[in-house]
Image 1 (cartoon, one colour):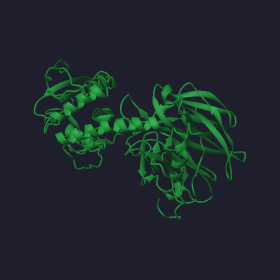
Image 2 (cartoon, rainbow, N blue to C red):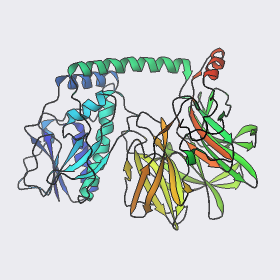
Image 3 (cartoon, one colour):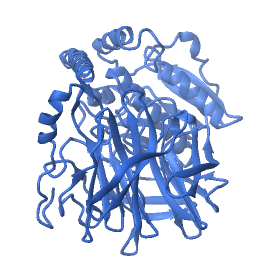
Image 4 (cartoon, helix red, strand yellow):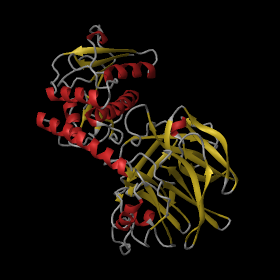
Length: 512
């Protein structure tokens, strides 16, 4: 197979070289080359100026995917028609003679200017890979900008997901998805200057905030009741939410409740701001709330969070997030609730966050948010399959199953409700952990996956703080989490705490 990447002769970037090398690795035996072409629409000169300023101030001269390429990176014009041409130039026509010509679209437009216009406007563009000959959309996704720093970081986040989608399109060129069209915006020199200035001011404000407050400071919300909860209602209404008290210099997040032998316990991430590393802790719950003190149950040299719990094969298991270790690790409960032992590495060499396991139709399915070097942490859903919980686990045929900042990252255990499977997901469209959605799983088998999303469920008067990213329930104990402003000065904490107290819940059926 011969692949040619058509790139504007004056607009070659390190991204194009990285894509060439990635495709050569993923398609062994293929010939992959960069080809310089003419006729691409130029970007405003202010784009290059802003990228250069960011490289000097934010990146301290490290390489980025936006760096220009030397002309030596381009090969000679291809002799004969290639099997696949990838138009990365934004020209109106390209890839003449190729059996298949693909190009990325940003909000429906084929040029980087549309991507940059969206980023300058404060949002990620929708990426689509188009079959130029038929006009069919082969695959699409929306990247997360949670880790993006400036225009450079935003472009890197988009480029990193373009690479995944192009690979998917090459593997399945017969697909056809609905086309969506978003009004594009061409960024002017004034827009770019305003964006750059706003970014610098934002950096300063964030530094001041982190000097004055522990941030982010997550907190757990709980309530004990037997009525319908968030999963049934689709909102936070119902009994009043309570806050699980923390020591101030530590935060609690990612709550997972469980009831065994008539006693309920809540497991959660416990992070010490002074150390910056999370462990897994727990506390017993009764009908009126927590019983006794919080106690640690699991600690490793690396950060741990999201203590997913599952009962299977006659045992209780935990799969805490430990993405910094490069593994998704399975722990077996030796003595409930305090003693756990490492049992198996389910996935290795992968940065998998918030692994959530479901037993369905005789198989185990693991869903997690994965990251490949660059881009956000919450926009790419990977699914793995196994016949036993300890594995071996294999990649699902549909991977990457989703690239969608608003629908990919797990947010709690998957629930069976009225004959359907429902998974809470994080909606990170407007930032990490900003809201939840409930997704009905329409298909889940070794060959396919599909889901239908419900509306966002966000924080508000019933749960102040601006974020909401975990939902779980065990019997009568229902739990969520979110953030709070937590000043480092003790005198200010009481004043802030009063403003962040949940209000009385809305009547049933009233959206929060």
